Structures are given as C-alpha cells and as structure tokens.
Length: 245
Length: 352
Ligand SMILES: Cc1ncc(C[n+]2csc(CCOP(=O)(O)OP(=O)(O)O)c2C)c(N)n1
Ligand code: SF4
Image (cartoon, rainbow over all chains, first blue to last red):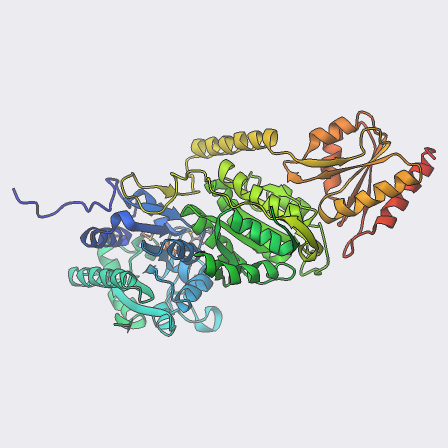
C-alpha cells in the first residue's frame, strides 16, 4: 500500500494541547514538514517562546530550548554564531515578539543574524487570557482594552513584517495566513523559503503568520477563520515584503 | 612559566580564554567595559564569538543560548546591568547551564556611582533573581587571582552545571601586577545535554517550565542537593595571622587586600589582629569563621557598603562572639583608617 499521509518525523507522537480551531498546531506541522523535506531535522535547534506555544518542545522532535518571554532571538543569535552550520529558528507569538521582545527581534534583524523567525500573530495574548497585544486591531475588544482599542489611548497596531523589512540585515520577510488550504500551502512555501535563505546565509528571515485564537476572540472555529479574513487582512496585508535573492 | 606584567581586567579576560571561553556577550557599562573591549579584540583572532548585545537582557540570553549549545561563555557588566541580567541568571540556574558572569561592581542604588563598591553582596550571594537558587560567587583580590579564579570559575560552572559570578571592584580591574600566565585548559567536561542538533541521539530540551507541582518540587530538591555538595566542596578563604588573634577582620576582594596591611599595622601597635578573606562569597567560608570564633574575642566586618557580609559572619558565629562593622560607600577605606578602627576597639576593650 502506498503511504499518502503520515506524521512528519520532526513532530513527536504527542497530542497538541491547543484549543479547538487554534492554528498553532497547523503551523507546527508545516514547520515539521519543511524540516523533513529539507532533511535538516538533526541539524535544527528550535527556540520556543512564552505564550500558548510554550510547550512546543513537547511537539517538535529535535533539539529545542524554551526561552524567557521575548528573548528567543538573543538565544538564537548565540547558538547560530557558535554553530554556524546548524539551522536555528525562533517561534514567537505577538506578545512575545512585538511587545516584550521588540528589542531582541529588531536587533537580531538589524544584525542580519542568520536565523529564521516564525511569528504567530493572533492579535492578542492567548495564554494569559486575551489581553491586548501590540498587534490588537483598532476597535478590537481585549480584556485590557475592554472598550475596544482606540488609537488615542492604546496607540496603533504593530506591523512587524513591514517594520523588519526596512532593516538591511533582513533578507526575507513575508506575511501569510493559515485560513484556507491555499493559504496553508502558501505558508508552507514561505517557511521553506525562509529556511533556504538561512541555508544560503543571506541574513535574517521571518514569516509572520496570521493565526486564530477562537477562545479569546469569543468565536467558534469557523467564525474565527472568517474574522481573520474580514478583520485582520485589511490591517495586515499578505505577501512578501523583502526577498533578497 | 612566564612572569608578565598584566592589568586585572586583561588577566581576567585572558584567564577566560585560557579556560576555553569561546563566546562573550556584552553591553557597555563603566567600570566593566574594558573586559568587553578586550574580548572584542581577541575573540575574532581565536575563532571565538563576540557580540555587543542591544542590552544586558539580550546579552544574558545570548549566554543562555551559547551555554545551551555546549560552549564556555561569559558576560561582564556592573550594577544596573547586573540587575537586568537577573531574570536570565534565574533561567540559567534552573536550566543548570554553566556560564561565568562578571560583576565589576559599582555603588548603588539606582545609577549610583562608578567608584569601587561591594554593595551587590546581597544580590550576588542570595541568588539575585526569582526563585530558590544560588550561583557560586568568587571575589579575587589581586591580578593573579583574577586569572586563576576565572579559570576556576569556568571549571566549577561546567562541573557543577551552575552559573558562577566573579565579583570585583573596578580598582582591581585596573591594577597592574606581575603574574604567572597559566597553561590553556585542554580537558573539558562532557555536555551530553547540549542543544546542538540531535544527530544520532534523542532530542535534547532546555526547559525551565514545570507546571506539575510535584515535578517542580523535585527540581528544587535536586538544586538544593547540588548546592549542598557545592557547600561541601567549594568554600575558599585566605587567612592571615588568625591563630592567636583577639580581633579577626573579615573582608573580601579589594577590601581584603587593604585590610591585610591594617592587620600588620595593628600588630606593630601591639594588637593581636588577624584577617579572614573569603574568596568564595557563596558558598560562604563559614567553617573558617566558626573555628576562629573559638579563640577570637571579637570580629570586625569591613566592607565597601552599609553592612551586608556581616550577616553571614553572624550566622556563622551563631552569637558566640560580638561582630562589629566598619564600612564606607563610594570610597574604599584606606589601611590606616581600618587599623585605627582595630586599635580603637582594642583600647576600648582594654586589650592595650
Ligand atoms: C517576563 C514575563 N512577563 C509576563 C509573562 C506572562 N505571560 C505569559 S504568556 C504571555 C503572553 C503571550 O502572548 P503571545 O506572545 O501573543 O502568545 P499567544 O499566547 O497568543 O500564543 C505573557 C504576558 C511572563 N511569562 N514573563
Ligand atoms: S488560547 Fe488562543 S492561542 Fe492559545 S491555544 Fe487557545 S486558541 Fe490557541
């Protein structure tokens, strides 16, 4: 019998703890598939964030570290500099990367660290119960902007892909979404491209992936996908923002 | 072996390189920057890595990454920078990641001042960050010790899987003395736990999150057992003329060096003084102090702060002998100042 579908070797045989309709699991799988296809599992070191994906080390089947909140790019910097032939990636949420870890991600990209960042943008803090993140949309309700985010009070959403694309050290910056089969495939392509950019030593690479948080958005999984398309896409346009060949 | 004239900071940095340190991650702050500048010049020439981080937070997390990758790594800072590193030091402690953190101390609180200080004694010896942990803390008092203790620090860090802090005062960093340069370290402790790629083995995970409370308690017991072992194996102190001493001075680092002169001076004046200079601040050499307390009539803790180590001395003595304190802030007491204190105590107690 021909095998048409199986668990990637880069994933452990553990059940994800994510909420129904959460897309963290899809993204884990896409990363694992790319590492398998590039045959670099044994050369990869993944750095997990503080956030809902803090337990990603229980799912990935290769060497992993769990970072302090926001510091993954600094940790990745040292590992990659000391072990230049390995693949190093960070996996970070929007609170982790765009708030407390803003300094680390901006400087890792400015220095052109040859690491890859997978940035999961779900517009709020999932793990701590739905507080406002730098990526929260204007008008969006979160537990710490209960009247809806207002520019006068809470400022404007952070456009991380656009921001980092402006840094000379960044070689590949892209924003994708995992709302439809077509976009899932596009996300996988972007993940692989980012890893190839790292392989070729071109500089820093990041894929920002628009992700769902049905639990804290107060929506069911299907509504959450629709909310992403209707609300997030206008603020966070998909596409490549930087691609050094 | 070569005798060469070396500056304290250089001896420390060279000691690190001789010990096999191949990653240095720093952020400028007076009076520690010279160590980073030395490493910036040296690392590229020996196949090592130097990164000037964007902050002390980033620097200590680079240390976390580099150590987890299996390398001997170091960072150096002072006062406000060491405070920023505390979150990382807590993570390194629970991850049991070996590393060396240098604190060229300055006075505080706040931005404080850049003069010699020992005001970070509590922060260094009580862990400093969140959680139940200790780092080994060593305090050199001369240039030779700057090299030797740095090499020892890397060994202890690897052997016990623990962050080791080197505490010194800026004055020591700038001191020039002839020293014997040591041989490079060639034997290293195996690190099968390193996260450096899982070729031919099961994946390694470097993790400090333990949501299961039983496991968290187990981890804490594991750490405490390690600290117990370190307390048994690593206490170091220099003693000077304590055998017949009526008054024992306890002073570390720069202060220990200065107080030695005061003890000699007090002896000339007929006071039987002696000195205990803790070389490890944690584990604190309480055994030496306890045994000196059997014969001494009084202890005097001399510190460049408002009185911190005195608590450890009192804990060691357990109330058997009175302990007095003399300290300055922003300036290190000179030898005459301390010998005067010693002589005053002797006169007051009717020993002379
Ligand atoms: C220094 C520090 N501050 C705060 C926290 C609490 N905390 C845990 S997860 C989290 C937010 C994570 O949100 P995000 O990065 O958006 O990831 P998500 O959970 O949405 O995937 C915060 C603030 C922490 N662990 N450490
Ligand atoms: S809280 Fe949100 S981000 Fe976290 S697992 Fe649930 S759906 Fe996913």
